[in-house]
Image 1 (cartoon, one colour):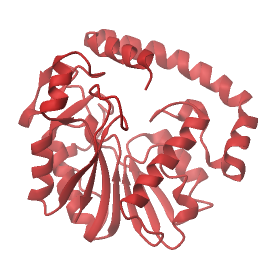
Image 2: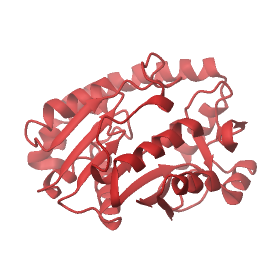
Image 3: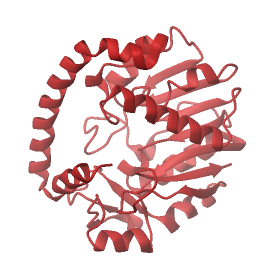
Image 4: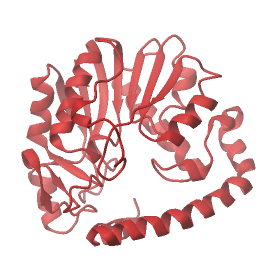
Length: 294
């Protein structure tokens, strides 16, 4: 993350709620118009970067779960794939991707998962539609479904409370679980319910990769010193902290002790694999990364 991006993120989170909403709308319209044009004129570039996989890569204006850039889209996927393999992912595994997005993490798995299978769930209609229409016909072992889970900021018309959402899968069905940038937008009671569901669907010996904003002595000191890109000034349940005073889940940090204890309460072991740069550290992936073992 560049210093400029960090500054913009800090300015955004310092705005009142209505200011954030207006900024989002203004930036969204301008960004989407720009990215539609870039998508049209960037088709050759996309083919150069992705080769015969280019038809499975979404246009830039659909990339709402990360940077809108073809080269970065590819690199993000490769970085995630490397971590999955480091955490024990095998070509025969059955994978659950909670918050599967637009396929950023999925693309490198298509040729790797030769005898396994993949289930992606996500609340964003356009993401699920793209992946279902473009990826599943060529790779029928990769399936995607929309889940209409409520969120005050991201899906205010959702039909299902996150604390009541039952994953649409059987017990002990998966070998590997991915949860990227989900618990960073969820308060602790809802998060622990999801952890219980992960424990239910994950096989004994199964692994997973989950990202967080973890609150501990170091990260809280950096926040206090003004070095964090996220000004988590508002405290919520179980010591969670957020940037928004009105309970919007734009960015939520959780007490490290609470997170590790939640996995332990549900019969899993959690290990902090990588501490992120979000709070002002100079190295690491942006979010904190935890490896879980059932």
